[in-house]
Length: 179
Image (cartoon, helix red, strand yellow):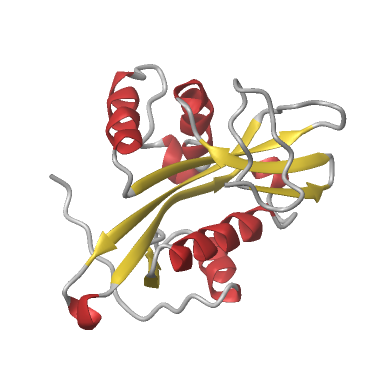
């Protein structure tokens, strides 16, 4: 489905989910493909917390996860590119996963889960994260979700402020159990 004003790209370039002018070019959000995986892992490792848990030297576990996620229509892997003027594609500078979950609570409501939101450290503060989360909210609404949830590590205080500015509330305590 094409939105008004959307540019149709050659077959080897995924269609844009969103485009916006940003400092340095055009930010283009699109579905991730297998070739994006190394850049996605680099983004996930681009902070102290991620550097300690991501290991790009062995891509096989990431490839298996990508294939499983990509095969399930309830999950989307999305990347953002910074496309230089006059080009059709650019480097991957952002990523996230969006999952759609049915539930019994809230009168059988669907919810979306936002995971692994990352923007290249050199581009933070330019509105790219806001564009990505805004698209994820609209996509969740389009799919009938009435709640979006996410978790962010306690140490990521800047991320907490970012999500609060977008209207998210720290209404629950998230817990994890390493298996």
